[in-house]
Image 1 (cartoon, rainbow, N blue to C red):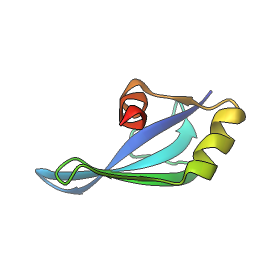
Image 2 (cartoon, rainbow, N blue to C red; image 1 turned 45 degrees about the vertical axis):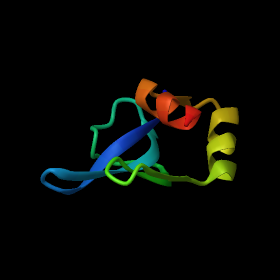
Image 3 (tube, one colour; image 1 turned 90 degrees about the vertical axis):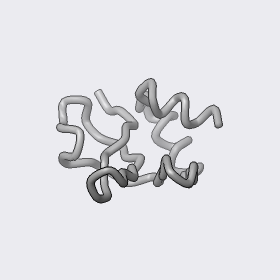
Image 4 (cartoon, helix red, strand yellow; image 1 turned 30 degrees about the vertical axis):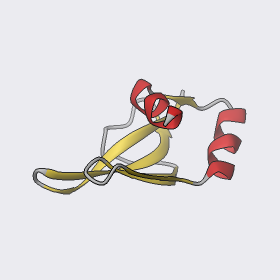
Length: 73
């Protein structure tokens, strides 16, 4: 199953995240299919390519609970 999930980047205690499309069995920071956005919790900055997001959702990708919460913002 294909999921839209977060992968962690950044330094210790200064996390930032990539929003990626990946296989549900892949590791958190493992191999992904496509990067579709970024999220920084310190600056509350969220940037997503809406065209890519809608394309993957139409193709059956399921966002994780955390990504669903971010998309509501």
